Amino acid sequence: MPITDQFWEYAKEAIISAAAAETDEDRQGLLELSRTWTRAALLECQCIPLSILSSPSAKGTHHVSEHVLP
Image 1 (cartoon, rainbow, N blue to C red):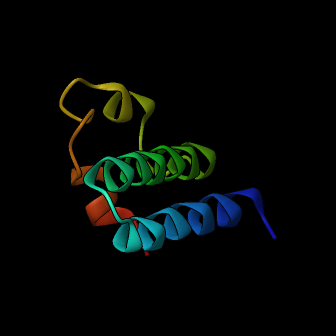
Image 2: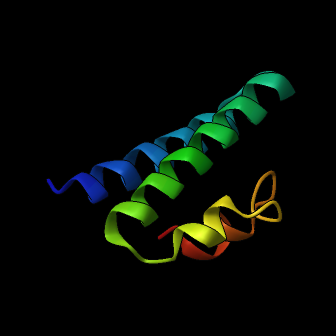
């Protein structure tokens, strides 16, 4: 399995786990983990420029992962 596919799988697993999380703290941590794996996958496949992922507006928002996750 290509590394990019693994990163997408990890991001998906984190989202599924977040949906089942019992506390908001756990849910937020898992969603952040999903965002991290999503960024890693996007960087690996060079789908979007690094400058977009590292911009202040991309941090703490969902717009990157909402529109890119399969």
